[in-house]
Amino acid sequence: MSPRPPAQIGMPAGDIETPALVVDLDLFDANLATLRDAVRGSGLRLRPHGKAHKCPDIARHQMAAGAIGLCCQKVSEAEVFVAAGIPDILVTNEIVDPRKLARLVALAERARIGVCVDGMAHVEGLKAAVAGKGVTVDVLVEIDVGQGRCGMPPGPEMTRLAAVIADTPGLVFAGLQAYHGGAQHLRQPEERRAAIADAAAAVRRATALLDQAGLACRTVTGAGTGSFGLEMASGAYTELQCGSYALMDADYARNRFEGPVFAHALLVHATVISTAVAGQAVLDAGYKALAVDSGRPVPFEIDTDIIGMSDEHTLLRQPKDRALVPGDRVRLIPGHVDPTVNLHDWFVGVRSGVVEALWPIAARGPGL
Ligand code: PLP
Ligand code: MN
Image (cartoon, rainbow, N blue to C red):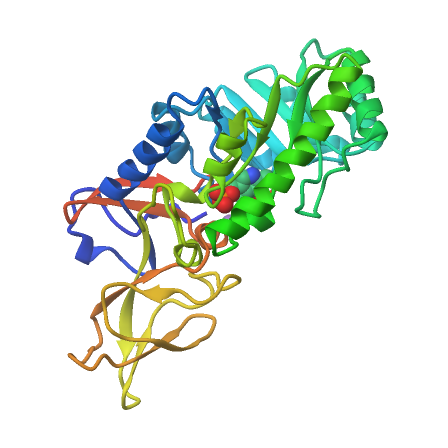
């Protein structure tokens, strides 16, 4: 990672070196408060997903705003968050490499650690990793509630797996991982409602089977920014894993929301480096600063369109009302928060136009 941040504390936001990932701290604080208030009184626990930011400073703010712990997708993320003092981490993923399992179990000496499984091989791997270590690891069986990624169907095999976990020294059967990612970005509330109704029905089938076998589900965890109100209202879940809500992105802005709306707290600041071609302004940020898997970024508070992108450049149509010149700043709403953040080393936090925070994205990278 680059040891040199693109700004210094106290600097005007207009002096930040570009390309830079800039957080509006007032909007970020408001997003955290919005989710905290939406969940307050529901009895559900909030466990934000750290994959969206990979940043211990953001994790600490989330803990201060009512989170009981963080989710991670990778052991390397969990290591960074535990080192930063986050006391409770759930890896919402299946881990198979014995070296990774050993690192995960080592974290259980310093924090409460949970992990997901969807087959016997994962349980056997965990059993071997935890043997003789004197720690316990929470194990959640991941069920497929419509995502079609990891997760087994609710059924007898799921119940057998839970029973083996419950009988294995060092492992605790903690409940179910039941995340429906495909539901998050369905644009209409009715579509999301239908998808999460199906997910909640699958959860209920699973918990009924486990109950019959005398296996209590302490935790049923899932949900994201697009659907958390539905999981919350379903009564089937005990824990929410929203990630994007803290920073937001252009793709989520295309959802129609009925409940609380989160603000664009994250922008990429870029600089115009060329206007040599008539009608066009070229920015110093391209695919290496902005992920495009969920569509191109959206120019923020400027009347223009993106007409092209390449590795290090974004081409803008010159706005009608003013001509951009080299040195001008342009701000962009990232298309997709998680992979955009992963391209950068630092968040620059700005309040009232002044740089107030420099937060390392300490867990960035593909994740070991
Ligand atoms: N939980 C899991 C397992 C995820 O993979 C994700 C994101 O993809 C989330 C939670 C958070 O979702 P969102 O960023 O939509 O809030
Ligand atoms: Mn995402």
